[in-house]
Length: 121
Image (tube, rainbow, N blue to C red; front, side, top):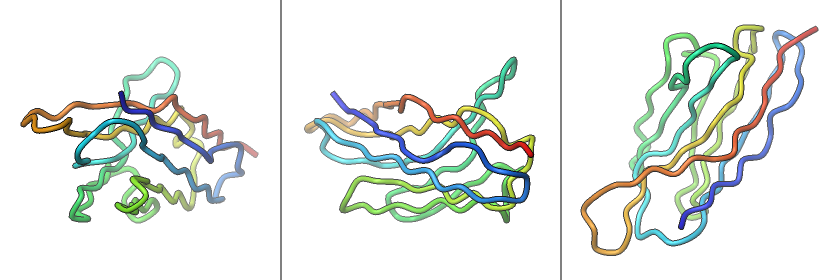
């Protein structure tokens, strides 16, 4: 069992900044990628950013240059710094981790509970 605890998020004015974090705990032998998806009402869940255990990052085109993902492998925690927020960034942000258990070769995915980001004046 892997648990993800998200924190951060909230209400911010357009142009403002927020930071969200995602801490993983539980039973796993290793974590590979960590990241966030977001889902706005009536829309599909889309990838926002991901980071591998080696620090390689991927961003959605819509957030490049504004969002920065990082991670602390010792703490099994990822961070998403969101700057220059726009109304279209408003969504529920879900973190995820891809992890291995014991000696298994398969990767599994766990999801956080989601955190609301509201961008409004």
